[in-house]
Image (cartoon, rainbow, N blue to C red):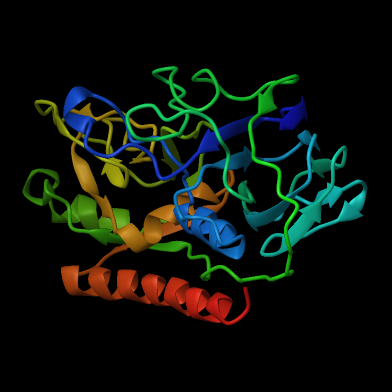
Length: 308
């Protein structure tokens, strides 16, 4: 077990999330930075989709009540194990009664903690992820709090310390074109891609709100249409919302575009007041970006195959 001594800002169990239920109004949920989840799991020779802990901001303490091996990835939230510093991108052996603590970081927002064999909570609709809005999955459908005990399988086997870097972070985010380009008009869309936005404090796992000083306001109203993680909604106020994994499944605001798959993970790590810019790309450019990201993970697998 892992016992939560202090839960911090937001501590949840996540995997890749739920697929195939959006027509029922069920959000995806799941890790906002799936690449961090994948790398952490591969460092432990886990399955890519084994459930992990998503730690937002930090400020939490976890006590292990059995031996295991862990891997951290994502943001550097100044983690310590019994007071000794440990770092994202590496594996560590953990002994019974040791305490893993997170302070907070100056860059990045979410860290991912994988344990050997993955977190052993029950699946709901094919996923172990926590849906905070619908209140199911994960640990009783909620964020973890002090006193909760997270089920894991003890591990007493051999352990080889390994590490891996993450793909580079980006602040220029690439987009598929807007399906409402004719409605919004070229002047507004040109204004959008020439604007440097600030990430709002009013952001969460549902979506990242963006602030700016330019005029993107409008008076358009649309029938509700299907939206997904990566859809960028434009409310009449003119302040865009980038929908994330816990976002709704339908919406009536015009869409400025959709974040390409390779770049969506960046929004897991943007902190309030970070700067974000956008550019439209072709489908071919989006495919190449995904292939580059997949290539990074493939190289990691090849390196680990010769190590573990």
